[in-house]
Image (cartoon, rainbow, N blue to C red):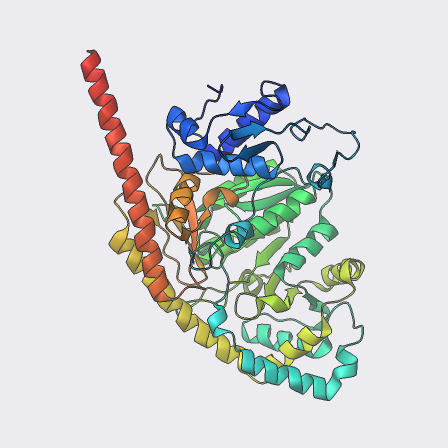
Length: 514
């Protein structure tokens, strides 16, 4: 039998442990080209894991070219050299069938699956809680088409030409009016139009961060932000996010931990999502917002406020944004149309001090010259006609109903020992499985039943908790939400029963030995 040892208590999913250990055996020469490895069912029995765990590990190794299955014969180590370890500065490896092995040349060596991969591989009829994105069945397509037609009739030549790097002027004016109504005083020199919040973070990273600079991120955090600052070779400092209120501690970023981190490090930026945080759904209370700004001012550290979910509040009352509370001019406020409507148009904006916008404009010009002019002009028309405000009001009601359905289903179906956050808006909710359960392993079994979710390990900067997961609910109707939760709970209960039977068998064995 293969010298493989899995650790169920590890935060690393079992199939990843198995994949990595088999790959290591190939690289070390313990497994050679032509060697046969056990069938997935056989190895699963030997290791005491579900067959799907082994099948997933084998599937990834086969996609890498390390192993190959033959019907009726078994699975073998590839005999064409694909399994040999390549170390820099070796030249590109050629495979007669595939040409250059591009995966050996990529600069990003982390190799983790991205959330979009989970969705892309899902069957069409799967109930997917994976992504936090708007409901496509509520896109105001006809209203947008009217706006596009109006723009093309009025100024087609202008919007189809090159434009200014800081943005289409009528859209800037519309956004200034939008944020002014939300309590943010901004002028033309304080606004930069971007290709959405992801680009905003990228531009900020390029403008501010040098390799080795310390950047404070929430933990867990939005994976796109983590990826951007890792690529900038920043030293990412993780500050915990509290998902459940406790005596003396409020929800959201831990202010005591933030204070200690600022005191012990020279920090370049603090990146935070104070409203309906992705992935947990929690929001910073007013006192914590003021404390965060006070700490940032004391240490002279800019704050990047990701406000992308801020308008999706379920109640009329809402906390002021950090930018609205900012009296020291230290907040860089980023926002986008993507979570309200039209994520495919890729239009967002940054509100910041004029000196910051000047610098970001240069970086933007060097990156992509300007954001798509037709998209900007169409959204400016959408705002001017009052359609944006009307659509936001509608979607707040839609998402409130879906969030209520999710919470009700969780209370009805989830077993004891499971707990989840109680967002009052946004698009996602954070769930903690009973202690000792691995969300990545649960996903394997849930996927077999047609339900997908995002395991928590994708969101952590450090110290991932294996029993956590995110449920994105905005793009699902109430009926599908209820069905999905019921199925997920059934799978979890089944795994809990298996574990209970295993404990009983172990206890019986010990009694028999005595």
